[in-house]
Image (cartoon, rainbow, N blue to C red; front, side, top):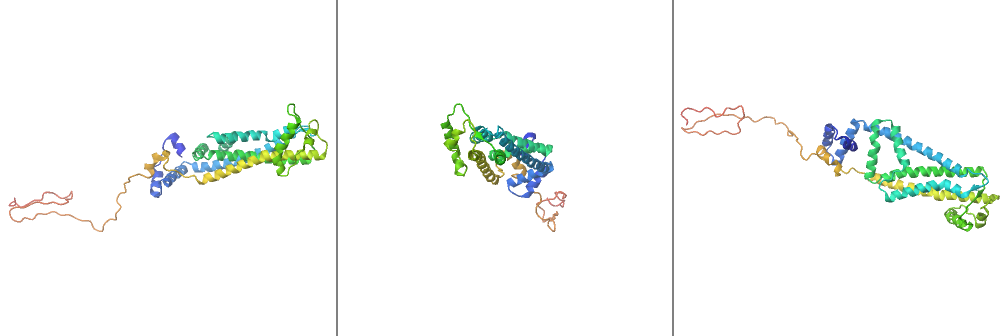
Amino acid sequence: MRLREEQTGLLEDNEACRKARTSGGSLAERLKIRGLFLAQRDGLVSAQQHWLQGAKLAFWLLMFSAVLSGVILAKAALSGPPQAINIFWALASLIGLNLVSLFVWCFTLIFAKHTQSPLSQLWLWLSGKLARDAKAAQLAPALLVLLQRHNLLRWGLGRVLNGWWLVALCSALITLTMLLATRRYGFVWESTIVASDSFVTLVHTFGQPAAWLGFAVPDSTLIQSSDLAAVAGEQARQVWASWLLGMLLIYGVMPRLISSLMCEWRWRRGIKDIQLNADDPIWQSLHERVQPSSERLGVVDAAPATLPSSSSGAQAVGSHAVLVAIELDEDISWPPTVPEHVT
């Protein structure tokens, strides 16, 4: 409601302010009562329900696209001749784009104030379209302003981005495992500028974290013998397949899982701390409307059983007299008639 009033001016809120004043709560509670009354009156509460339904549907559409993208990544990694799959091309196809996206997100998280990825913008756009309610158009901008004010926007959108990549990479891991289990692949490596010794070092260095989890790492002999043609041995194919799965898990799934958990923790922690700050300058114009410094109360005492009455009269004593009147009513004629001998 506040964002709408900033754009169009204050709404007609006499009844809303009256309800807020009669509630007798704190200033923040009165502002909430006013806003809720206006939202219900203008149909924004029902529009919010429609937007939430659209947001849920958009979320599941994104998750479906993540599963589909993971399948495509796995099939693209093994799309070459089955007997001679370039191991590093396969690895780059699986985690290359993910690592670029992760580095960009980390950079914007540290150095940028606003972190909106194309994926999160797509989710917000789909949520508005699927809501099918014209009044819901202002809800997404209002939500972004609220989250940005409490420094939660980056974590909320980070949940969407990292969650999407986590689902996509898990889908790729499952699909890759199924492909390796049902088909026979041979692996080779090729390079014009990288020597075989350097290649051995790279494979061992990057494969060491996976080895701690039980994944196989090719030895120097196997690596050097795979530079021109795939080794025909069954064990060689299994070692390379295990190394590839370990790389996807360690450098693909695990970083996204850690990022998702961090975003989820910061999000839940921040949501609990969101409170309406009635002292914020944006609410100053409404303070007097919902909690005026002075207010006309009217008659608050009970009516008496009898009302006092007044009377007038004259009493002459001697030849001189003094006229005295106290709290005369408007219907009493004054001064009264006195005898002629009184001066």
